[in-house]
Amino acid sequence: MEVLMEETCLFFRSSSPEETASVTFIESGHCGWQEQNRTVHLGNDCISEDVCFELIGRVLNANQPRPHISRHINLHYNCTEKCTTACEHGGEILDDCSCKCPYGFKGERCQDLTKLSSFTDGSCGVVNADNKGDYVKLSTYPGARPKVTFCQWLVRSEDPWSIIDAEIEDLGLDNMDIGPNQHCNDILNVYGTNDVKGPIACDGTANITHIRSMNNWLLFELRSNPFSESTFTGPSIRYHTIQRQPGQTSFFPKISGQNTF
Image 1 (tube, rainbow, N blue to C red):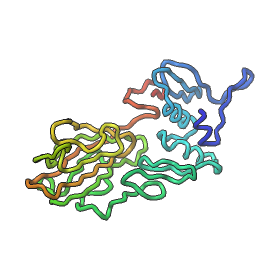
Image 2: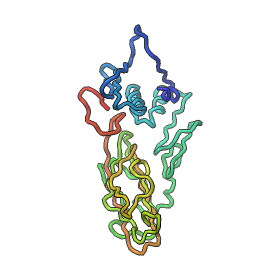
Image 3: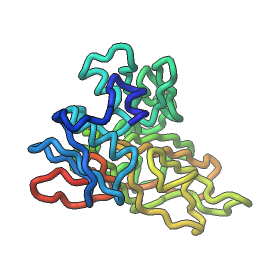
Image 4: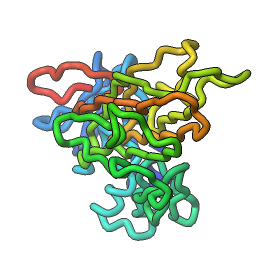
C-alpha cells in the first residue's frame, strides 16, 4: 500500500469499529473482487504487489495492468500533484515524470520504434495483434532473405489486458560454420518477455519455440549475416492474443459470482 500512496493521492488507514468501510479487505482462500458487497479477498497463495495494485485499480475504476494503474488513478481523480504520464513498452518513469525508454523505443511515452528508417523489408514495423492471430515473417518468405536484412516486428494489442502468445514455426537462421562462442550467424532477439535472454540460438544448444509476452506486446528483431554463403529464409513466427484478468499471472477459470484471480 505504501508504494500506491507514494505514487497517487490515495491514503489507506485502518477503520474503527464505528465506521462503515466503503471497501472491505478480508483474508480468504483466493484473490478476487466482489462488486456486489465491495469486498476484496486476499489469499496467501496468490497475493503479490501486482495483484494488490490491480485489485485496487478494479475497485477504483482504473481497470489497467500494473504498470499503468497509478497514472490512471491520478488522471481519474485529478491528482495533478502526482505523475500522470504512462510509459509504454516497458518504459521507466523517472523522478521528473519523464519516461526512460528501453532499447528499440523512443518518444514522450516510448510509443515509437527508434529504427524505422533502417528497416529493409516491407513487413517490418508495427503488427496489429488483434487480428485473431497471424504470422510475422519477411515478405520474401519462404524464399531466400536478402543478404543484408534488418527488421523489427512490434506485435502489439490495443487491449492492455492482452498477452501475446508466439510460436516459432521455422527459425530460418544462418547456422552454417558457426564460430567459437557463437550460437548463430544471424541474430534474432525478442524483447518484452521473460522466456528468452539474449539472441535465440540455432546451433542446437537451446530449443526455444514458444514465447509469451509479459504485457500486450512483443518486439522481434532480426539482423542477418551479410556474409552467408548459403540461402536462408528468416523466421516464420505464428502469434495470437490471450486475454488475462487483473492480477492473473497464470490463466485460471473464473468462479461464478466473483472476479477471481
